[in-house]
Image 1: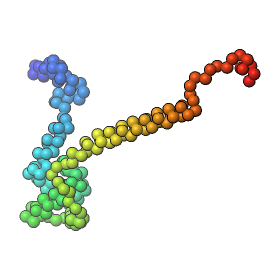
Image 2 (image 1 turned 90 degrees about the vertical axis):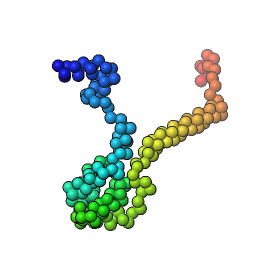
Image 3 (image 1 turned 30 degrees about the horizontal axis):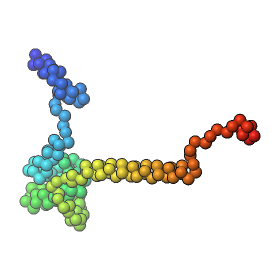
Length: 173
C-alpha cells in the first residue's frame, strides 16, 4: 500500500512526474549548483583529508592513480595542497613515504603552486560564452564584408535587369 501511495504521489505531481519521465528516478535531478556546493564544502574538509590518506594507502603512493580516484580533485589545482597534507601525515607517522610518492613530490616541488588551490576556476563557464560571442561576432563581420563586396560587384558590373532582345536581334545572333 505504501508503494502504491508513493506511485500515486509521483504521478499526481507534474514536476515529480517530469523528473521521473526524464531520469527514471523519483529523486530530484542533481544540478550543477548542487555539485558546486558539494565541491565547495568538500574541498579542504576533514572528510577530504581522510579520503586522501586512505587513497594514498590504497594506491601505495601512486599519485596519478590517487587523482583518478579522489573526489573533486584536479592534479593542476590540488597537487601542492595534497602534497602538504600527505607530508604532514608522513611527519606525524600516520603514513609511510613511498618511492612513487617521493618521485612525484620532488616533481611537484619544482613547479609553481596555483594562485588559489581551494576553489576551482569559474572561468570554465566564461570561455564558452566568450567563445560563442567571438564566433558570432566574426560570423557577422564576415557576412557584412560579403554583403558589401557583393553589392560593390553589382554596382561595378551592373546587375540590373537586362531587357530581352527583340525578335530581330534574337534571330541575328
